[in-house]
Each structure stands twice: as C-alpha cells, then as structure tokens.
Length: 99
Ligand SMILES: [Zn+2]
Image (cartoon, rainbow, N blue to C red; front, side):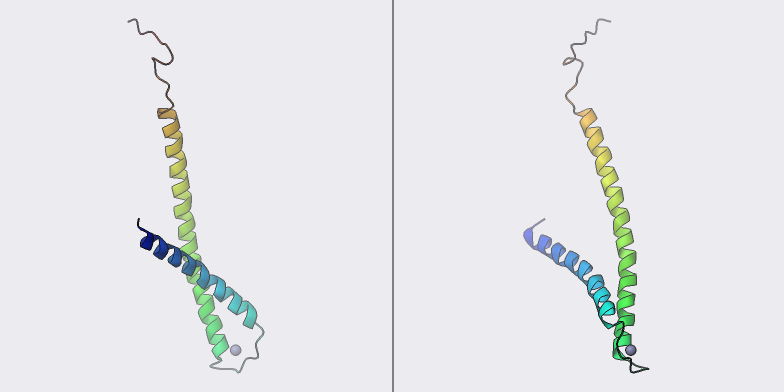
C-alpha cells in the first residue's frame, strides 16, 4: 500500500469518527434551544444529527464484528504457527526410529 492510499484511509477513518462525535456535541449543545416552532432550523439539524448517529451505530456494530473475527482468526493462526514452527523435530528431540 503506497503512502497516498494510507493517507486516504486515515482521512476516511477520521471522517467516520468525526461525524457522530460532531452530531453528538451539536445535539448536546442545542438541546435546550428556544424553538421557533414549525420549520425550526435547529430542530431540523438535530433530527439530521440523530439520523447520523443512528447510521454510524450500524457501521460501528459491523466494524466491531469484523474486528472480533479478525482478532480471533489472528490468534488462532498465531497459535498454530507457534505449534507448527516451534522447531521441535524428532531429530532435535533425539528420538531414535528403530523400526
Ligand atoms: Zn427548534
């Protein structure tokens, strides 16, 4: 992976983290605003922020599932690699095969 792809991946990760955090702080900052009634722009933005958080929630659950599967697979592969490539052979154990 060249450096431009790494930078693009980093920017996308930051954007994925940035949107729900900003939405959360927007809702927290404007929860007690003076509402003008119907067509209130702040209420509309709060609804959009709630929608962003709901969409992000589904993404993070899927990402967590993928992370758990990846860590489990890496652990199993690491354990198999340690067992299979531990350097223990019949010769190193000095086992005589006399049959
Ligand atoms: Zn309002």
